[in-house]
Image 1 (cartoon, rainbow, N blue to C red):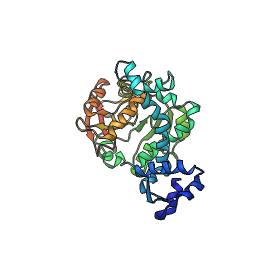
Image 2: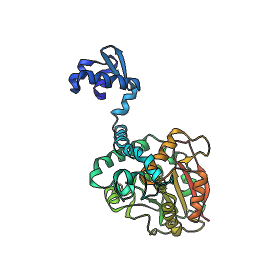
Image 3: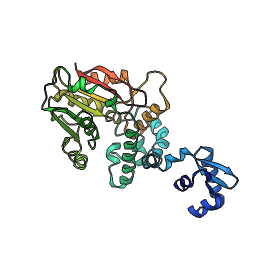
Image 4: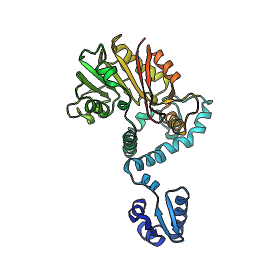
Amino acid sequence: MFEYLLDAGPDGKTLKEIEVKTGVDEILLMRLLRSLASIGLLSQIDEHRWRATSLAQTCVIPTLRSGIKFMFDFVGPVFQKMPESLARRDYRCPSALQGPLQDTYDTKLAGYDFIMEPRWADTLVDCNLFMKGRREGSTSWLEFYPFPERIAASENYKTPAVAVVDVGGGLGHGLMEIKSKFPELKGRLILQDLPNTVQQAGDGGRVFEPMAHDFFTPQPVKHSKAYLIRQVLHDWPDKECQTILKHIAEAMRPGYSKVLVNEFIVPEVGASDFITACDLVMMGLSGGMERTEGQWTRLLASAGLRIEKVWTLNEQTESVIEAVLV
């Protein structure tokens, strides 16, 4: 219906025309149209005519439409269950295996294992499309983090065997962006993720080397200049994050290797509705969390790492935390 009304332009369509197009009963349709107009998706021209607003684009752009479906169909029930779930655990932060998602769907699996089940295949597609659209609409970390100076052209950069390992890097878009922006970068680029994901990723047109790896096991690539971990740690509670980071730290070369954590940083005071909503979603789905700079400092220290510097563009863009061995 939204596509139909957007195509109609400013003149919109009559109630009868919309009824014929959708097959919805006239009285029910009128009640729904009034509700949609009240939240700004439609505009009522007169008693019998309606048009779409610019906000209605959110319902037809594929990535945003997928986001609405994912949040309503999969995340919504978890939020409805959250008060009961928190109460039954005496209001303690959920863990990766005991939380609102497990209570909602009666599963013992961690959130990111659960959504991989075949019955959630369409939901996973919606989730991935939504995240892809959010990334495309955001400023890249490479726009404000000085990658050439801190990594590629730093004083002790000697064309290493491995330049960057992208830990839990999905389909390799992060490494492809690095190579596209800095084609002169020397050294190997390695993409690490679970077997099915790296098989789907291929080699990015010979940009990177795919490597199947579970980041809860020891890091097999030693002494990379940079270990990049983007939008992964917020998926997990501190205990699991500490394991992931310790495995990376054990593979680093002192005075040389760096960890680049690309994640949101929650302001200590005055956090926005956006960042707090992200935090509650992570809590419900995986027991994860968005963290303040102080929480990142303590988490990294628990894995034998210290923060050298933090780059932040704004609250709605993931920061870059550069860390080295203590």
